[in-house]
Image (cartoon, rainbow over all chains, first blue to last red; front, side, top):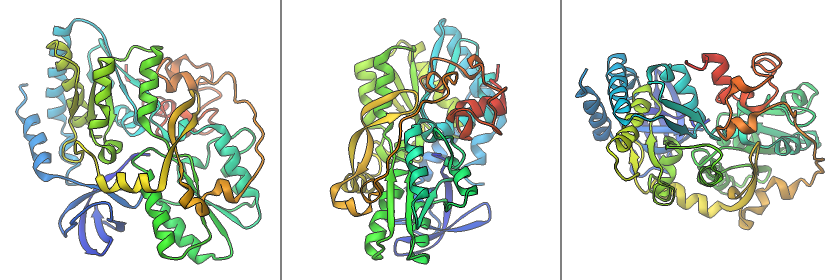
Amino acid sequence: MCLAVPMKVVSVKGNTAVAEFGGLKKEVNVELVAGVKKGDYLIIHAGCAIEKLDRDYAEETLSLLGGLKK
Amino acid sequence: MKYLSEYRNSAAMKRLAGAIRREAEGLGRSVNIMEVCGTHTMAIGRYGIRKMLPGSIKLLSGPGCPVCVTPGGYLDRAIEFSRLPGTVIATFGDMVRVPGSYSSLEKEHAAGNNIRVVYSPLESLDLAERFPDKKIIFLGVGFETTSPAAAISLKEAGKRGIKNFYIFSGHKRILPAMELLLKSEEVKIDAFICPGHVSAVIGSRPYEFIPEKHNVSCVVSGFEPLDILQSILMVIRIMAKGEKPRVENQYRRVVREKGNRRALALLSEVFEEADTEWRGIGTIEKSGLVLKKTYGDYDALKEFPVKVKKTGEDKRCICGDILRGIKNPADCILFGRECNPENPAGPCMVSSEGTCAAFYRYGNGR
């Protein structure tokens, strides 16, 4: 039930944005997240953005995983 | 898909599993790690995470599936609401097949009562505008990931002047349930995998009391297989090095220490804490969210007084013990026989995220 997916913002108008996931576009409510811009990735749950994805941390996690020994 | 598929890389999964195995060997004792989110339960099953772990690491599922912990009495009341003239029940799809004491929303729908599945509470507002002569009752279930969306819909109803929209709040907070499990000591928990999306809202800080008071480490985790494996490695390392238990945040790309301030402010504007019943567990103090008096006009409980008789659940069903991590679906006499996803006897099988549904679908991984 707590499933939420990272969706990419295509356009923003007031508290509503159009966001995309795997080719699917959906209108989402973004009032809980400050300063949403086109190109941002938002975590969407039940039609609402609950947080913005931080790309620096996303890359950091991946580079940590890449550095593990076999 | 960006920010998903990278976290499903199988070579990295193998490397992580190897690192976990080495740390576990060094640790030399068995550990129980409990996850308290149905989405984690499903991901662990789907990606075969149990199979990748050494036998000394046991993953337990806690009371993290909101549909599963919603008591039968809540459903009985929702069913009574659906039988009132002019009402429409708007609900997430997971709730439709959950058995109450004598019926389910699916059966009520077949009997001609109006049940609509929505993806978001905001969709129920659209229903309210489209059908002004109907009364739309949204079934608000879910933890802190979901309750902000319900709060937004209430604010929106006010802004749009919608008067025929109500919420039947069964929203719950996960922390009191985690604390209860720790205090009850029915099951040994060495570490918690904390729910990533609940934590996006509440932050990683509210878990601090768990290492401080109970000496148990917590790791806030994402939902992809690499996230979960890395989270397990993080807590195993703390134990293997003999470090003081602490809260780690593996899901830093989404979760901030203090959570989402706007969401938290909205939750405390709309809801207040109340004691509430959990299926299989009982009443937990301050674990529920009910509408504040200022939002009383939207409260289905105030608008629709119905009588609900108290009836028992199938005594053979051990969902309650499973939700507390004491038993495993394989211990249940009904599991896979009388109780299966087609004919579920208990909530852990009904919800696609329930422990029994996950074990039925993916096996127990050992």
